[in-house]
Amino acid sequence: MKTALVVGVGRSGSAAAAMLVRRGWHVVAVDTGPVDAPELSALGVDVRGEHLDPVPDVALVVKSPGVPGDAAQVVAARAAGASVISEIELASRELSNPIIAVTGTNGKTTTTELAAHLLRAAGRSALACGNQGLPLTSLVDSVDPSTWLVVECSSFQLEDVDRFHPRAAVVLNLTPDHLDRHPTMGDYRAAKLRVFQAMTADDLAIAPEGWAIPGRARPRVLRDGARRGPDDIAWSQGGLHVDGLGMVVGWDAIPLRGRHNRENVMAAAALVAHAARLTGTEIAAGLASFAGVAHRLEVVATYHGVTFVNDSKATNTDAASAALDAYPHGVHLIAGGKPKGASFAPLATAAKAVGVRCVYLIGEAGPEIGTAMRAVGVPTHDAGTLAVAVAAASAAAAPGEVVLLAPGCASFDQFTSFEERGDRFRALVAELAPRRPPLGPNGGAVA
Image 1: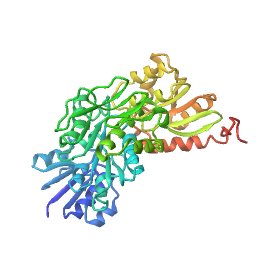
Image 2: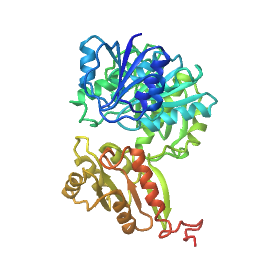
Image 3: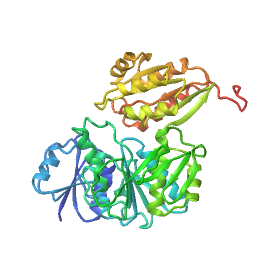
Image 4: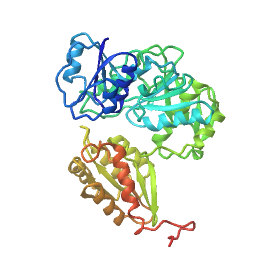
């Protein structure tokens, strides 16, 4: 019996370990922190928490997304000749399902969920999975082979793919992010490009204009503008157009806000049109019924004319700037958290451009964001915590204005995930209800 090493016993690592046991491997699962995984131990997995030393005599290493490539166990295993792969690579070798892959710095989850929604709305069986929450290995042996799998792929997952082969894939965009993990933007870009490397000439590859991509697929382009080029697969010209389908739907019929969401819509529509041959009518109907994704420009409530918007997934400055594009007037911005190594000057410029009323600073990055904001004349309030920020922003906001959580940072200084941060924002807003009664149908407060 060969030994497989799983490094990182989180959601994807646990799913990978369980799958490997089903395939007859002896599995050792290690983590740098304490681990409570009785379900894995019950399967026969050798679980080792707070384990930093190399594990000898392993034939395969599955590296979880949060584990850097220079982790001691990974380096030692690779030097000894072990194959090092990611969880999505492991799963893809066992699944025969048709796969659509989505990556990029921003917009991955919305595009993934939207593409899966379009497929389901058109009567196809489809699941959104991967980086957005459902590990791909958890589907091995349990999902019907005809089900479409729309896989959100992070750069961390793509670092270690080899044969992962989607029928259609997109790199939505690339802006500075995770520079605390990737040494350079070139390394970050190279990781993203690995999504294309096993593709064939029959597959659809969507990448930013001018990119040279690996694999045999010809790169196609999304274009948000009136000019159309020969490589455009989807474009904006008074509405959504898709190559081969023509005009699909007007933008005013799509509920998603902001220019960045136009790109997400174009990508999702092009992917499903090519891979699953959805028609323009099917795509238009699916777009009209898409309710959006939690923690992505999610309208939580409107109290006394003030709208509260949860964009906790805006974990970098470009995503936070895109949120300001969607809500360009009367914004009270809550920003901060754990920094990722990128400058906050572009976010400050975006805040200045749309006249942000005030930025409520939270977390480790609060002082740095405050310095950038004040340098361009944007007012700030040193809140420290999300609870203080929500209370202060709510008290300052006037009817018709917006309290927007778009942190521009990771959540790991004060929260375990962006989901926990967004859930806390929701709960804090709900506590405001007695003080800010909801608006009635004619604009008056409900008693």
